[in-house]
Length: 457
Image (cartoon, rainbow, N blue to C red):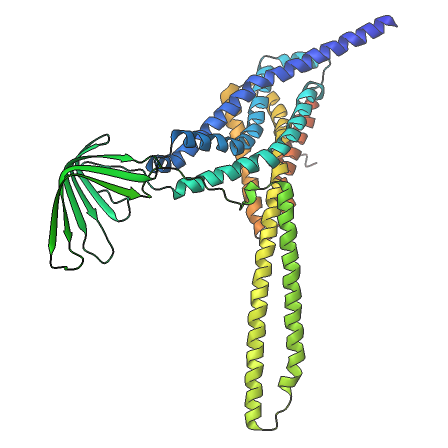
């Protein structure tokens, strides 16, 4: 009896060691996948926003904050794909090194080998839900506020030799030569509405921003001002100066932070989304009540307007009143129906976003179910093959999400189905592949039929 217990304990310890080994094999390819995907997303982000970051003269700290806040939505996209990459690469290596064959020869099934990884994927999916529900909406909200602040920021002051700079409203600035803050051969035209332009010329000067970071200071030396007398437009004024300072408020490069209270769909948690859905459903009920009132009111007025008139004048007035009533009722009904349709579309859009937060989180489990059997059967390919297969399945997954979102917004399918269809289809396919791989059967069952000569059966 003690021998049996000892043997059972040894087998249990061996299985724990095997499970630990399977999990540790996922770490390196998983981290590799996370790094590669986020790196690609960062490059794409910089490519789309580099022009505005440079053109607006955004401070380095703000640009780094923008990138850090973007890591929220990047992470929830990268983690499921990294899970698929890690699973595929690790099981491809285990299969190519015949480690899977050795484990099966020892009597260990693929299900037993994969058990810790499947459990880990479910736990990771559970962890992704609060991240997707709380962290990502908050980072998206701060990101949106920062982007609005950057877009409202005035362009950075860029003086080019021999080129008029018209970025500052009301001013046109030309310099022959600029070296840092030092400028030479300066011509400034001050454009005043409904008045002749005032022209300032100077041999040299310097440009800098005041301490408030929003006032441009142009200090000019050895120049003259050309202007027209406001009282007597025929009188031309010419004023020479040794030093002249021009302060232009609101032209600085200071980034003014904007804190919006409004939150878009991707800036809300599931609780916030459900609250918005409840509000719009209440609006739909109120609009439907309005429709009923319009129809009821029209039905009550109709008999009096349709009653036979005693005179031709009264008949015409009744006809005109009937036409006005019908036209008013139709316009009111059309307006109410349009509002109802808009509210219902908004409800569908909010519902889609709520389901998306959970559905994408469980993509981790779906991709593990897909990755294990495909990795076992795809012995060759290594990291490159794993990346290619991962990108292919991930493209299919997000094609499902994108198409489902559009169909749900238009009311063709339910919001639940629009977001969970990808998990259902790919998860079912992965489970089917996994079961057949566990039984050491081909993914696609087939039968070979021998056709004998003259035998039609």
